[in-house]
Length: 375
View 1: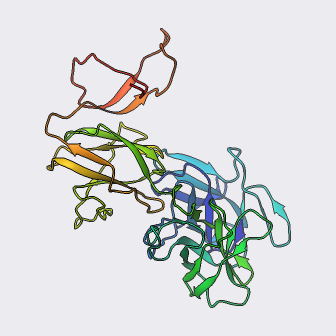
View 2: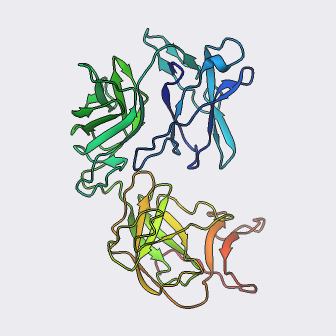
View 3: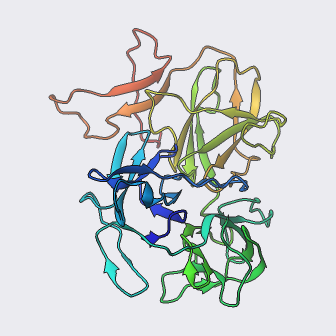
């Protein structure tokens, strides 16, 4: 972790949150300088703030009081209000080796005069065989484009590389090279996974950006719906969607038309976007389960096709198979959270009991049913 002010760096980890938080350089003694989150506005899908990585611009160390040549990096999750720094004892400290071969394991960023190119996104370039334009995932061989800055004019040793874990990264074929764009493809030798992509310019590596290399049939990245409960909701009721590969956030659409082309905040399509319930409901979107609300004002009735779109890679479920039938009637009892969500049966006498969160429970209701899905 070193480089000149103004360089872009990628901070990788876990639980950064899906909402943009803050990144700062410094220490309690030096004070903290905020770092700008890199904007990648020309990318159709992709964000510089993700739950597992963030791209920021290195601030100017001259803005510190006194001479500062190294600093910690602090990241704040605005949803949980939790913080972590790169040099504390919570989790491993980032380590790196500089150009002279010296290994640093203290978790500090070192300010130098080394200027590097910056990457903010690597996405699929043009719709190809079921992969949408701008997706953050695709199979080997798919055409891609890399967005960033400082690429300049391509020299003889400049390259776009995929870190596949071996001694040397794989270089991809380059079809076009501009100051802010590189056109290439995923090398056929890259196995499914999340390799880091770098731009190499004048012998200097850019920050790394993960690109999800999928299986050729896309079965490991496209949302798959296996069940919807209830399949006959009424307005004002929750619906639980079960399946796989939903990611950690996204959009749920319903449309009276099979295979409708639904997109976020598009009022011109035939789709209605459903929302997840607000607090106190929690964990309403996981990789295998989504809870959505059929709004009270939902006016349509009858059969609707359900489509799930992942926010992180842009892939959508089929949209021609999975359906619900919105019926007339009173809102149904709807559960969005059970606390705790696991434990022994029967609960011990000293257990405080289960807390159900949701709506439409009706005062005085006394019947609760538990089943294991086999009956």
